[in-house]
Image: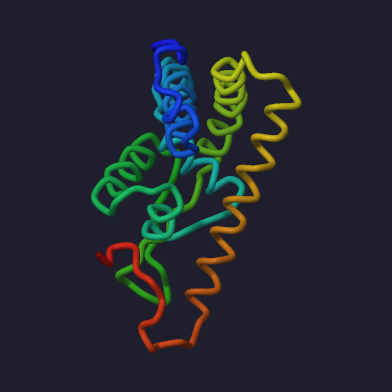
Length: 169
């Protein structure tokens, strides 16, 4: 990665640019570590969600980890083929697939978790523990605020159309 000294100062002031660089660096380290075990980051995210959050629909998982439907199907297919996750029809809605982790998937997630943690630590090794603590706290508060905002929008009875849409031009 090029040194930051060659980057325009205006870019270095931009939170979106800073976050993208951080995301790219962290993902590179984590993906490399996971690839050595035959996994990718999205598979790890799905296993972690299923271990920590229990079963979920494919649509819910896709929304949480930011994967479109067709990619989500392939992702779950891969986990299911390796017997790390399983699909069951939702008894309340036959069209809906509920994904749950298997015992093998649970063990695999436990094995991968320290690998991911070490890769993240390595990617951020130039940061002090105090800086990392602040980064994690900031990220958690932003995510919590986003979820709160989403929950409020979904729970709103306002049908007047006054809610701004992301795709509105």
